[in-house]
Every structure is written in structure tokens, then in C-alpha cells.
Image: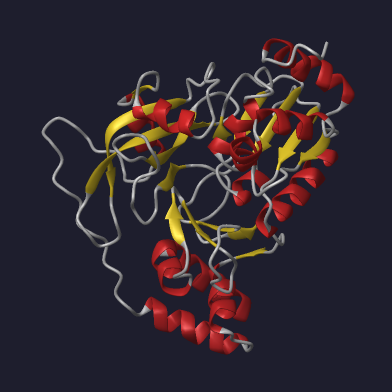
Length: 354
């Protein structure tokens, strides 16, 4: 009977998953169809993600911490975030929460003849990407070049939107220029989008609280830079992976947008070697370890690539492209040095190496 009661409570909490997260995991924020936070005890960070809507991959309210491998449901969230030890106290707290009203905001009246896509949905992400334009000659290109990223061939998954909506908590909606990245599954279908809001002149990110946000179905998917074959690299951030691509221009790259999503990225059927691009923090370490374990279980060789500083964009900007190339060269498999790095060394201004 107790088990049935717990199952029912977990299901009812899942129907209000975002409200539960906002109440008990207040140090996190919504990213697409997930709530991201540091851990189940409401620490600030991004390594734990909670599913906010049912999907074929799982029910709303289920969560996983990429840094530790922990997982559970919203009853566990209530227990850990409130420091409860006795199960009756957990269920009492859950019943108390469920008795509170959680009204949904009224949707804005749709324009005549247009059916609005649900906010944060995969369809909303597809529409946003379709409304955006190529980055050439835009403030997105300016922004990337100011960060040392000048080699931009094959970046069709990145686009520019001149007036992308930004909602700052309870404040009025603002518009800022933004880099829009398409998040796709293994078949190339857009399942989500990532927005990086920028200053109007492209000099930096926009001066707002959260200049990066994702939307849609992100778990297992990624931004795709190049077509994956037997070798690819996967990492967290778009700029990190674009920085690595400056010296490995022919290697397919897959930014997964966070440590949690990196740990859950799906592998192409052709993949035989995966380079795991980690950020230098505990969440990055956890994602690396989980991904190595998953890759090895599928017969895929997994090789971590580590930056000298906090991430590869810092290496590129502060140490320079030659130092970045030298640091990566010693971490690659020998055959991949010849396949991916040598050509760029010859043409990229280092004629002493052949």
C-alpha cells in the first residue's frame, strides 16, 4: 500500500514537475524541456537535469545527475532538498505541496489563422530556427571572430536572429540579437534550439542575467558541426567546440550544451572513436566518466581531450592557436594526427612541419 501511495504521489508531482522544481530546486532554471540545477540538494550548477514533460524517453519528474550518476523522482527531490529522513515526512510534504494551487499562465490570444507552438517545445524550436538567417556578415560572425573563431565553414546549424525574445523572470519581454543553434537527433531532425543573446554590436554576450538558454527536446541530441563518420568529438559548449574546430576543421563536432546532456549524447552507428571534450570542472569530470563507460560498452574507443585552461576557447584566446594545436596533437590517436591535424598545420602558417 505504501509503495502504491508513493507511486501515485510521484505521478501527481510529475504532472506539476516545473512547479515542483521552482519550489524545491529554486537555484536551477528551465532549459528546454528540462530543469537544470547543481544537484538534488538544490546546489547551484548544471549537472542535474529533471524531465519536465513526458516523452518516449521517460516520464516527467525523472531526474539524473551527470556528475554522480544519481537518479530518481520528485519524491527524492523533496526528501533531499528538505533534508528529510523519514518516508512519512516526505509524503506529508508532498501532499502539502499538492494541496497548493499552481495555476498555469493564460496563453496569449493567437493571431488569426496561426496556431501557436507550445512555449519551449520542439516545434517552437523548429519555427525559431526557420525564422533565422545564415550568420555570414551578421553580429554572430562578429561575436565569434572576437573570440578567436574565424574558421566558420560547415556551420549551417548556426543562424542569426536580429530580435529574439528574452523573458527576464517576471519582468517584461525584451528583444536582443541572438545566435540560434539547431539541436538535432541522429537523423538530422531538429528537436530543440539553443539561444545565445548578443550585444547589438557583437562585442560580447547581451548584458542580461541568462544570456544562454535552450528549448525543446535536448536529451540525447546535440548541435551538429560536420557529418559524423567513424571519428567525432563531443563536448559541452558551442564556442568550446568551434575553438577546437579551428585546428581540426575536418573532424565532426557535437556540442551537447551542458555536462548533463553530454553524458547522455547518442552515438551514430558509424562511430568507432569518440573524443570527449571536457570542461575543467567537477560536472565535466562526471560527464566524461559516464560517457567513457557508455562508449566502451558499445565498443567505441573514448579519448578525453583536456584544455590547458578552463576550456578550449580560453586556450585559443589566451594561449594562441599554435599552443592549442600543440596541446591537442599529443592527445590525439596517431592516425588522427595524420588524418585531421597535419593538413591544417601545413596550410595554416606552420610550413616547418610536413
